[in-house]
Image (cartoon, rainbow over all chains, first blue to last red; front, top):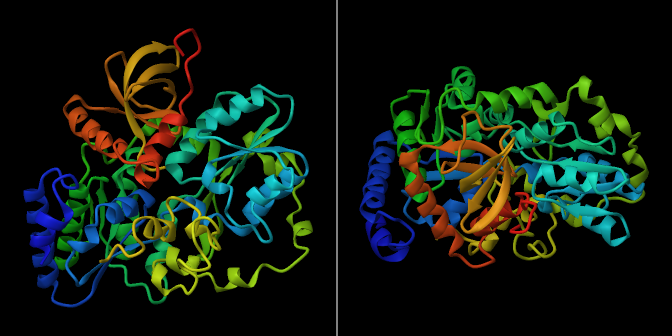
Length: 377
Length: 97
């Protein structure tokens, strides 16, 4: 009984307005029942959404017939193995690598950056692109910013590239672009996705209108939602209403943060520095236009053009057999859950992760493990 | 990484702002934000950059959510995300840094 759970189990602190949460949970149950077939599956593409859903126990108040699946919403998790290898080769050649903390333990073909660091390579954790530039200013060594993140984070990388970094600074971009992967996931065999919940703060920059083309092409509705429990429940209600009414369109349920056109200034900087090219997303697929790479005019700041990076010399031994059992890619594509992985919580835990989904704080496996391993209960 | 962190602008120094994030003063870059920002305004910071100005009627709600998250213990992932965002902002130079 959702109502009991909301008033007792979930509690006042978790929902600042329990009455509203109860009403939204009731509305969700009604609309899903009106759809009249089961299950109804929708997908979100944001680690912070999954964190909030798991942390606040939202799946406990969802109707049983509604599946809310996390898709490829973890940029660290979808960083491809050869991309990690590129950073490792550079680090082994004595280049100083600056990167976001979650990138350290992501497995490459034979090792991670953390392994390379333990063997003596220089790897610095930064919390922003600007810190990586400062690091370069404070040294004569070459510094490469191994840059991960979706378009929201790529904007910060673009801004530092445009602000004239020192000559010893360059960028190894693994930045990824979300809209194209939504097309891939929606078209995957076995895909059950009937609607997408889009991440509020990413849309702050791109604008909600960015999803119009996707909706036109696939006939699947997209709702932009914030991160508070009530924002997520409200977004889900709107999304299942659109599914029920067979009304594929973009609805912005987070107008206090998101406009249709987004932050034009940020978009202008993003696309002045980056262009979208096709590339592999780890374990998922080749995603046309899914990778953000530096434009030719910024070749001097592009580590791929500055250095001759040959990752093949790393491939001296085969990847571990555990790695081949890992189903991280299927989980990121939304067609399996962590519980379907035989390694989850056993051989694969945050302290010794096998796959990238257990490494990143935005990875489905780590989030499920951290918040009790079974957020559906 | 998606959450960002809100803060109150104390002072503008060229293309950067001195911002108070829940009692911690940091320098946030203003290259990306698409509106004029001045002292007293609230901004949302993501990896060291202000990505938007928070409209005045949204400030209380926004702060309440983050205050709730920051009460959480060290191990909580959402709290760690917000603390990581604060750690990503440059410390101002000068005696009170």
